[in-house]
Image 1 (cartoon, rainbow, N blue to C red):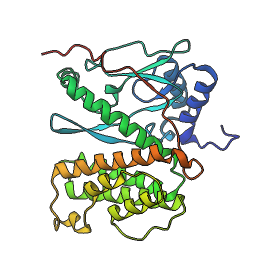
Image 2: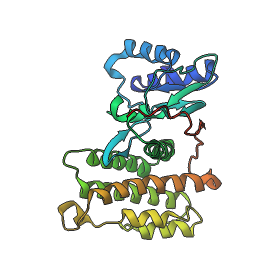
Image 3: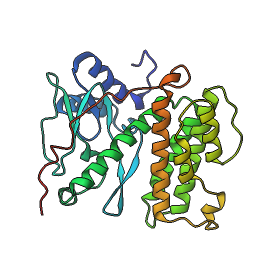
Length: 291
């Protein structure tokens, strides 16, 4: 890795990726939910480089709602194939290894959820988290894949800002919606430019989404853009914004990104399109709900 110019902060992730390609039939996970073999690899790098390993192992964070409260979702980084499931009881389980596929409970990605709260969730609540997880995973992975495009890399930063603002106390609703608009604006402009168009220097994401549609990409983006659109004055209380509207704008940006992710497959030479290698065990192994 040193010879290949991989900087120290990136070596833990790159080392796990190389290990997965050579030795694992399934996936190595960096972050919550690691199996014992991938943990040994990442622990070796931690012991060697300590605090110099500063990279976030997740491709990006997003927000899910549980009982009216917001929670950060930070999926680990995956390499290869994985079998996902959702079990509200947060049990210990066989995470796979060298001789069998890697398995992952998506509930482990929800930051700060307690065992008691998780165990109390209804089936519908777990399915809602499942949907948010897979939409968010696809969106953040797509943005990560295209981060060499400056506007998309900046959109990733705006997404993280929106997440932080939704999770502050008190929630900064107007700022969060504005950050979602900023992220959407940059993503739409980058996609327009990647497909040969010229974008206008405006904050009107509905207008930009319509321009993108005319280029043959992402026909449903206007639906999501309308939930994101706001004015600069929203940051100063000149435009009212509820917590619900800010959260809806965040989810709309995730959906807009996934729409671009799915429709850009026909334009592989324009944007880097990456499939998310996964298999989903349907919500049958949800685990018993206590109480």
